[in-house]
Length: 240
Image (cartoon, rainbow, N blue to C red; front, top):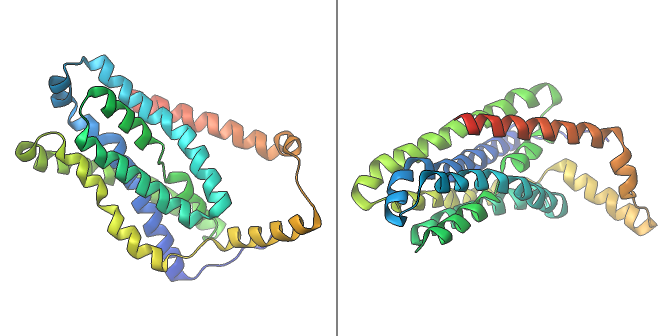
C-alpha cells in the first residue's frame, strides 16, 4: 500500500498528541510512588502490599494495550487516543476519593488500562516517513520523564498543603488540551485507506482467516518483539 503523506502541521499535531498521551501515562503510573508513605500510614498497610499496586498497574497496561489497540483499529487512532487519555485522567483523579485501600488499588489498576503509547506511535508511524519514525518515536518515549517530573512537582507542591490525595487530581490536566486537539488532529490517512479497502472487501465477501495471520512471519516477529519489550519494561521498573 502506498503511504499517505501528512502535512507538516498534521505531523506536529500528531507529535504533540502522542507526547501528551505518553507523558500523561507516566503521571498516572508514577504518582503513587511519591505518596507511598502517607498512603501506608493512612490505611495501615505494609510496603509489600502497596508494591503490589505498582506491579498491578503495569500488568494492566498489557490488556489495556490490547483493548485500546482494538479500538484504534476499529474506530480510529484519533478517537482511541483521546479515549485512553480520558480514561486514565478520570480513574486517576477518582483515587482522590478512595475510602479504602481496596478501592484505591482497584482504581489504580483500572487506570493502568488506559495506556496511550501504542496508539500515539501508530498515529506517528502512519504519518511520518520511515527514516524519521525512530527518531521522533524516541522523542515521544523520552517524554515519560516529563510525566515523572509532573508527578514529582505536583506532590511537592500539593501534598504539604492538602495531603496525599490532592496530587491525583492533577491527572485531569490533559482534558482541556485534548478537547482543543480534537478539533484539529487528523485521523490517520493509512487507517482511513484501510477502512476503505475493508469496505470493498466486505462487500465482495473477502476475509483473512485468523489462522493465516497467526502463521505469518509478521505475527512471529511481532510476538517476539512484544516479549522482549515487556521483559525489558518489567526489568526496568522492577529496578527503578
